[in-house]
Length: 136
Image (cartoon, rainbow, N blue to C red; front, side, top):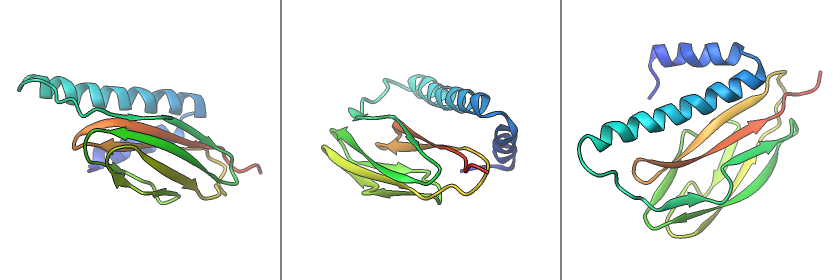
């Protein structure tokens, strides 16, 4: 869930150069997961969801495309925070599942970068999707 403050942070990230946006996005993701696990560890052992993904970084050209990843899991999982330009099939499952990720063409002059979270039930792992900007 986004608050007004987090939307402002995302707007600030969008104004940064591509390299800094990638680095900042990665750091925010790592810090978000770290703080989640630190707080959870105060209340007992961290659950082991045994979820992994074959590829956690996908890069697409501006014209779009598709890629497949394998999700390995010992529990049920669901992919959340899927942006409008990304199509994921299936977006939930269990055991070993091949997932297709399709990205629509990017017609803007801004590179896209989003993180898809694999929840099982808490964030277990993620896939970073980046897409080149359209050439002007």
